Length: 65
Image (cartoon, rainbow, N blue to C red; front, top):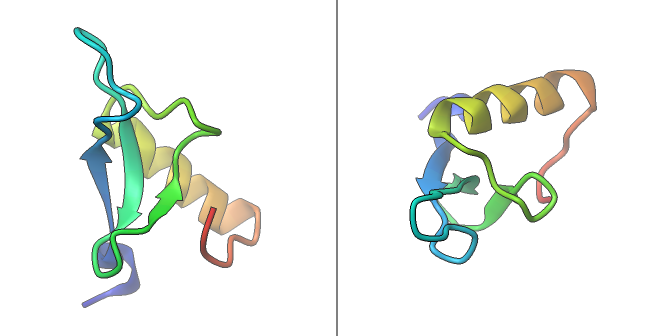
């Protein structure tokens, strides 16, 4: 499994409200939240992946939150 495949965007039951789904990035193997947009979540899975990818490339992301 490639490094990119380890992380998936999933709907967060905690951050989502009726009519306002929120997504976070989780580690597929450990189910640990890797990115939750400072507790706000992302409006869609594509935005979650795009932001997480940017953070990994440009901010020296090493894992965890």
